[in-house]
Image (cartoon, rainbow, N blue to C red; front, side, top):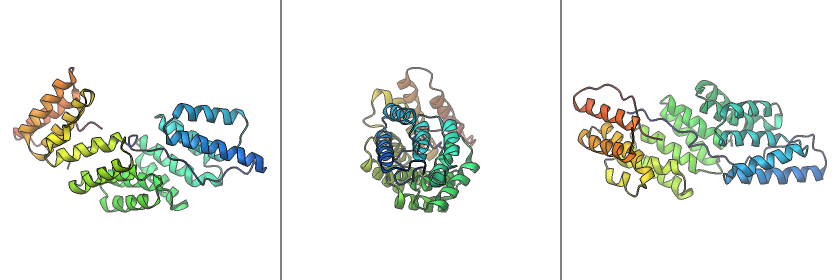
Length: 295
């Protein structure tokens, strides 16, 4: 129906890796308690997106000589959160050498590979993760996205169902499933999923943006752009204009995209390309779009 890029960054939420067994090199109860406390503190910092704190605590743990497979996994999660998937992949690959960390490491590696655009390898790693741990909710969520990329809608739906049943944080799953349904033209169901995501995480920008896009796809252009801040206006108008073009509402698309360009106050390549696309369609040119919605 349209080409919309899924933002997995946007979409990957770092969660605590509770339950991952730690390295047997820590044998004493005292050492175990210290490791457990450090892992809990770092996990909490990652959950709360306090990345500087998480990095500082990881550095302190390593300098203190704490040996625990979970620290490698948390280092990989921090690298993912900082937008360094190549480093994360290397870290997760190293962490996977510990049998106790295998499932979590394959999950992390699969998410990193997906961000790197290595879809086939990502899918294989994520399938390995859920085979090793059927409760690996983030791996199921990542598999859903990989199925979406292949337009394997039934498999994607099944993966998201498993993710919702096993994820500690369902908001990213609802967001991803909503986007999957948006791509399929199941607009009412998509809106419901984005609302579910926002009810669980009101500050989830990706879900809010996607909800506005779904409203625009239903022709609710005013609702799609209402309440936008000056910083948001250009991108939201672009998204609404693109949705109008996809719907065949070319006059409205022209209006919204022209407003997007004016709101940006400088050259807006994406909106300009979308405006040309809408005008080509209006003139009877059915070429596929070369631009898409802001994510």
